[in-house]
Image (cartoon, rainbow, N blue to C red; front, side, top):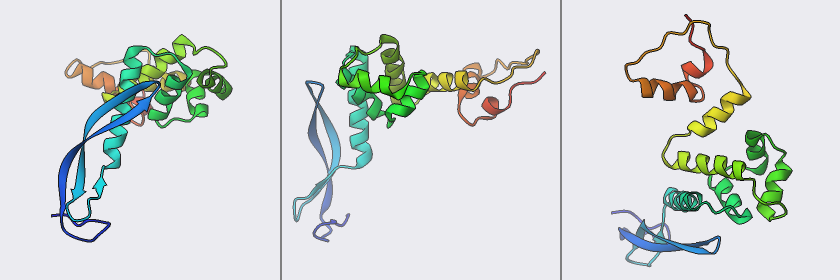
Length: 174
């Protein structure tokens, strides 16, 4: 049995807990794993479980196509990106991101689609959209003759875009 960080007693048990968050005028509820001390009543939810809940909310916003400033900001923050970093990826000044998020300008539909793609990719552990934009910012030279492997073709293609992979840093040579 685990020891409680508050009362130092070994009476911590796993539980599940309904938790809700208000985001963009909607209430999202999920059943989260938690731990409760049977002695003092303290309840603890792990940070990674809360982050997953927040990312899952972002996925729902992305799939709903909510193109509001608040939604755009929530999506960006769910990725842990600052406005400057997102602006660089979208090839726009950081001020544009701020204008969209505060409602001074309508959210650009293309920027919104790209941001939604980032969110869904992060949830699915497939950051291919982000990788494609990074490749556009730093194109690599491609040899005139390139040998391709068709065994595990999808796995190999995914590796070509991953940051830091051998395929990303060293182009195929014939």
